[in-house]
Length: 484
Figure 1: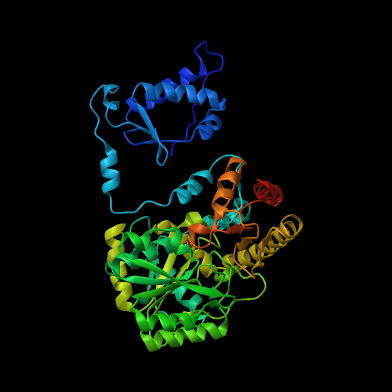
Figure 2: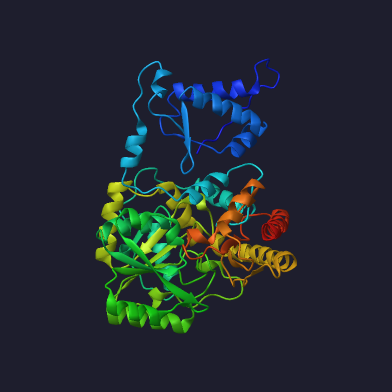
């Protein structure tokens, strides 16, 4: 999808549609817009260039008449691969052939749109799963950096599994959760996503399958699917994944492993109960089913801490435990970790060395300082208070504007409110309508194809004022679609 910082010159005697036509041609002749490049919809282009839609239609019609663009109902308007070379000073290769040949599957169009729209000026991000810049610990980070500046530090590579100081600090912290993990069984990764990618290519063979909760954040990515691994969803209730259904499934299939977010689940916010955790671990041991426990939201409890991790009950070494600083301290720090049997960690560390030769040594030094000082715990106390206030604000707004239009349950921690529309309208259609009105949503269908009437809302990113405007605007859009 194209974005532009260029604007037509309204003081120029050249008509606006001609300026836009020439701008498009310049992008083509420079090679920036190669054959197959998709052109945004007319409404988006009109907003992008701040012109009437008729101006865009005139420019596009001229480019189509010249054989430079073509359009169809399913794929939108694209740069033509045949006559386009006539514009260029030298024949240009068709990069589109290489793009489609790549093994990594692209995100769904909705996910790509979300990723791009998050950076549009003035957009209200009602579904973003990260902390607002106002909640990031800038002052504390500056103090940590000042302290590090007085020490000798390395700017070279760390050892394969990561900084020993950081792994020792993580080992101590996990011991407080009931997890016994020596530094040699911990691998530092560039965020939890990299841990999942390493598992997908390092431990699973093509044609295998992974059990996930339905819905699941993992469905919004293509990490496992690109590795030829299928995702199979299991239903949840208010206590988490229904283990009885998992036991029945194991009788008829041999899934390779299970992926779960037991604490403040993404996208539903559910916390797996103590009893359900014991039940799941018992099944894992009985069936020899490995489990990936994604615990990145654990420290974001707002009412009370969640039950101990699955890994704390793991006497058989069946659980790979994943943590991260991205949700609690800084998404830009790009530091996560994974712990499990040493042979597994050795395997994943070897693959990571082949991939990026280790996570940032500078970021690891910062993370180690956070954990070995009081900065992390003090920050979490402040952050929980701020998130409680945001959660209460969203709860009041939902009660005021969406009672009767939707159903929801406020989470006890994490970021997310899983909202079900009562009106029968499509969350995907609502997403598109909201985006045109400057409101960015996360429709439930990206987490499970059967969740077309759900939205994932977040109180962690938008400001109090943006939450108020966004929820009120969302309610207005729902009512207008119901009447349509």
